[in-house]
Each structure stands twice: as structure tokens, then as C-alpha cells.
Image (cartoon, rainbow, N blue to C red; front, side, top):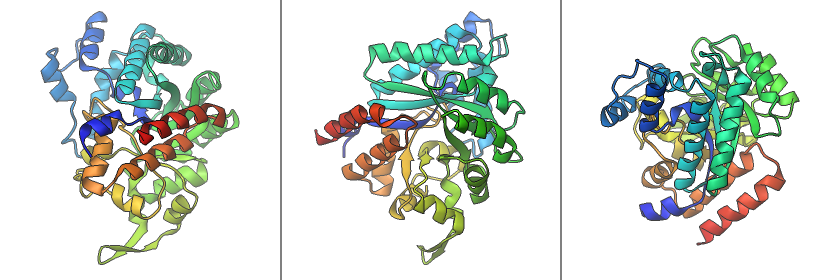
Length: 347
């Protein structure tokens, strides 16, 4: 399957961080606008190389670049621009539906309220939707290493039905269990938002168990370390542990971001568990996570699945529709997007 075919396919993305996907030239221009002195370089090529975290080897190291993207996203104008460009970039890659997430609590360093940041992101999405064939929705993150998850959840619920469709716990997993924020998760769910939680990325299956059983997560961000709850003999899976069985049997969607996982976990494309999870019936979807830090598009992620894990056109269609089925929207919104996907694959 050649690159042109993959580029032309309609795509659905569930796990994309707004502050992890800025254009490098936008970072430079926004830094100049607020006299931010912290960029490692103002040369486009040098800064692009600096942001690429392909040898980070850990989630904590990988997250270091966010210091600078967040620093330049402290005004409504900047957030709106980044959201607008993110939508256009997604559409240019063939994405027809995307849920893009960010933590508005991180955008309050210069006086913005969390609600201001959310409004700005939604305005940017609306502008992109007016210019490109893409539907964009927002997931609000709370940082699991901060104590203000209730404030983030309250801000998110004020925009339920107005473009905000979900709530998430992001940030470092080690030492910051999801159930520390169970009250915020419950508030989001009670107000009609979908709940996805980063788990099974930096920590193992127990973090996934906590997200599901103690917080009510409906989707899992990453989740690939669920394979640690599988038993193997001669390279074949012989038994699923209890949490792996729950995830598989209940078809809890895994928002798998292969390139990001390769960069944070120090694995290679061939050894990524994407193929194994697919073969054993887990509900896998594909996303980019952070397009800037991983220098990746969703087309690249689909290509990785084809080249290293035996995906064919049928598989790509299946995971695309799985992502759409898992999207935090109702069937009235989903149906026309499903028709677009079906028509694109029929071509």
C-alpha cells in the first residue's frame, strides 16, 4: 500500500494534544510576540530538531518540550491560532474527525481563566471547520500531578454540548494515581462528558485497572502495557489476566499512539505491541499523541501499522471505524462522518 493511498484515506483521531502539535514557525512567532526568552533556538530547523523527542527513552524526558509550547500559549489569541492551525493540519492529513485535548490550567500563567483558554480553543476549531472538511471536538485535561482537577472538570462541564466532549487525566503517571482525581472524573461523567484517562503508558496494568474500576474510564489513553497482563509460551499468548480480559471483553477502546510509545519506552516499531493487541481482539484505535514532539502524522501511524504489523486496507478501515464508534459524540453526529469514511474506503 503506497503512501499516496494512505494519505488519501479518511481518518479519525482520538488522542492528539493541542500543545504537543504546534507548527515550529508558530512557536517562534508566538515567543517573539510575548518576548519569551526561553526557546533553545529561534532557527526553524534547529528548533524542530530540538523538539523531536525520538531518543527521549522516558515519558518524563519526552514531556520536557511542553515547557516551551505551553509558555507561548498564554493568551487567547495564541491558543485560538494554535487550535485553528491544528485543525487545518489535521484536515490536510485526511482527518475528518478529531478529538484534540489540552489542560487549560496550564494556560493561566498570564492571567487567563481556564474558561478563557477553552473558549479560545473552541473558537480556533470553529474557524478551521469553516475552512476545511473536518469536525473538531475538545477534551479537557486535568494534570494528575496537580491538585486542581476539580477546577478543570468544572471548567470543562460549563462547555458540555458546546464543543467540549470529554475529560482526561494527563501528565506523569508515576506517583500520581488516577483515583486521586476520582471526584473530578465523577463530576465530568455526571455532566455528560466522556472520560478517557492516560494509563498503561509509563506504568503497567494496575494503572489501567485504577482508571477503569476506580474512576470509570470509558477509554484508555495509550494502554499498551496491558500486554504485561498477558501470559506467553513460545511467543504465543496462552492466558489473559483479569484486567486484560476486562479490557478485551468489554472492548474498552485503547488510544494507541505507536510513534510516541516508541519514543517514550525505547522500543522499536516491530516490537510495539500494536499487532499483538490487534490479533488478540483488543479494541485498538490509532492516534498521533504529539505531532511536534514525535514529528508524526496520522498517515505515518497508519503506515507503521501496515509496514510492521501486517495491516491491510480492511484493518485500517476497521480501526478508523472503531475510533469513530468510540468518539464522545452521539449517533446523529457520528452517522454522516461514518458515511464519509465508508465512501473514502470504497474509493
